[in-house]
Image (cartoon, rainbow, N blue to C red; front, side, top):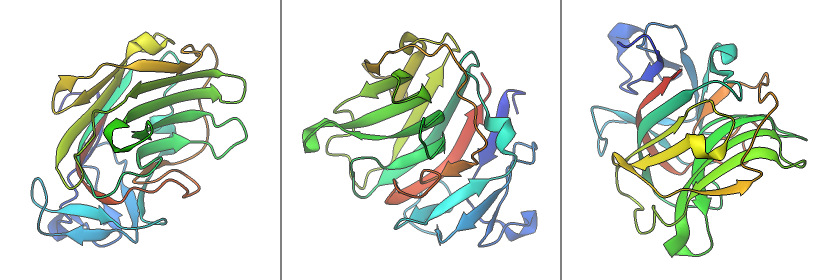
Length: 220
């Protein structure tokens, strides 16, 4: 694999690799394994092989070695995965390393409800202090409209520039038009001690309902 790949989870639950209902292997070789909480191993209707199904709050995969995902405001990083969302809520979280408050430092990739079914979209948070407007909030509104129960390849990239223009959001390998909220600038640290969570936010208040497959994160 490319040296910049720091996490790759196939979600295939392969027992010969030591995986089981609670242990999820990071096949990148970096040891960023995960613990599955309440998620179901899905052996059908997946994109490749098996996948995980998230049904409710408390269903998530918590990843070891949280410091490996402490990307600073000047650190480039990116992520991709396949997702099949059953229901879009106000926020349905795919990947999160967001503090639970009060400043909400960290980063998170989730669905965005722009108001009405036609405005369901993608959103990336890069936050130092939400209340003080020291944050990047990049949004692609409407790009998920009408896509419930459909497999899609979703990605984000951030170039480490500290500005919202350094964020790109992709659906099925197509770069989407991105609007900015917050100040669109972060000039302070976004680091925290929260774990990386797949399928929800630390604290469990923004769960995904649907399936995910083949999660990858790069430090570039």
